[in-house]
Length: 401
Picture 1 (cartoon, rainbow, N blue to C red):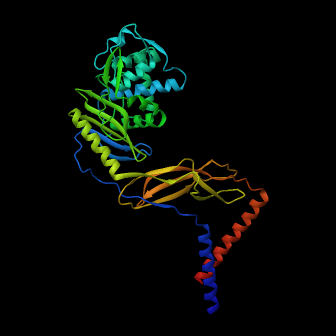
Picture 2: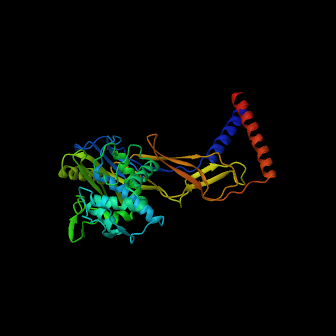
Picture 3: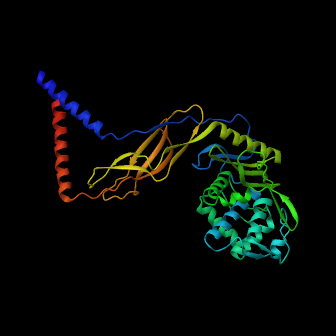
């Protein structure tokens, strides 16, 4: 009886050691809970605060409600301009002849004249800095032949970006039935500009612009009044109210704020400032993994090695409330992968979890090359696996006996 107990104990110890040998490294970081409410009232029909790099929403109010965006529309016009430049279809030095349609535009404008020759750069400055409606039409006609065709491209781009609560009827945001955007869609557009065309911010951050000897000023109230503010767009019509998409950088964290249909210029500035203050004071970004880190190991079929070291292709960053910081757990999930594998091949995902809730995911890639095992090695492993299965059955039998 004594020998039988010793035998069971020895088998149990072997099983425990085997299990521990299969457990990969565990990564954990601290992550606080997000605040449930703001310490101030957001007197806007819709509002949103987002960390730009990760896309983490820090505050939201009616963010999927379609609303008239007024001149915030012009951000899409600018995006298409710089995409055309990137593709080689246009240059900032291109000379454009102003049409009668552009000249007839009302509202904010550069005061272009029919037949006047202007460069694309001048029109970009007019759109970005002084919100010129006539410049929007001139650009649209130049790039697409007509404003109507340009608007089709605006809507196509909106669909491609996943802006599901947006429809454009013109290039400027001039009041029109069926012309709308949601706060979420405005942030999607803002992130696209910030991440893929940050050169637009160089124009949006300029405080004034003189054209035809007329000096006009940027209406973005955050510029010069808020630390780190460097772009985005204002909007106003009677239907839209006072709107503002703003962005600022502090301590290497960029936030995007959107407020729609506020009651006054002062109110849109105050709310935007409060949202940004809230974000910068209460949150921070933290890099959890870099491509130099080994996130863990996942199983590989038919490889010379039976496990693959994995990492991230780009830094895995998340947003953390500044104080306090609860724990973050990284969960490694491997794909059903088979050798051969090359370094950089997609191999699985890593989930960032807080209290069991997934707050972010990122692809995992191979951190090493793994060649395919030859038929003899695969056959040998199959035999070893069968022996292992038999060993498990015997150990269970002894344990239960």
